[in-house]
Image (cartoon, rainbow, N blue to C red; front, side, top):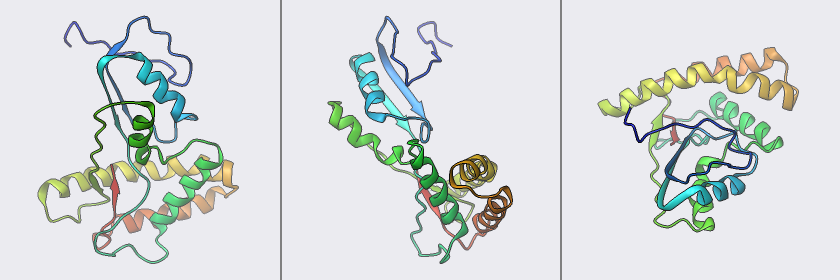
Length: 186
């Protein structure tokens, strides 16, 4: 690691107390972690050196398909919608990915750029690179289904453990089906 590089671990939602400003602040996967995104963006803005950069990477939990292959009554879409709705009830939005750009503009950041990539749910794409990304997406989502839903849906929405596991099982079957061309905005 270069001598001028360091990593800091802290609670982003508490007042920022670093004595030095940063040239670059990076965040990934803060969806569902932040109570007050406006205050976080203020903290980031105030802690950057003039000309400093902030980069955020997040995934939207809104399923898309370019060829209408999402099944009617999709279990995977239901899973995503239920988890998003539950997190909204406790003010831990999973919609931050689609809000970053406007939050940064509203705070006064300059040269704000947003790049949205398609993250396939499985290996359905024909393009080799996208097929590989879909394989990684499948592995990631496969390990994420229960962990995102069990505590969330049982504690916040009153589902039974069995109901959550059934939904996750149905969603898993659907997401593995190469005829279902779901992708998520990243």
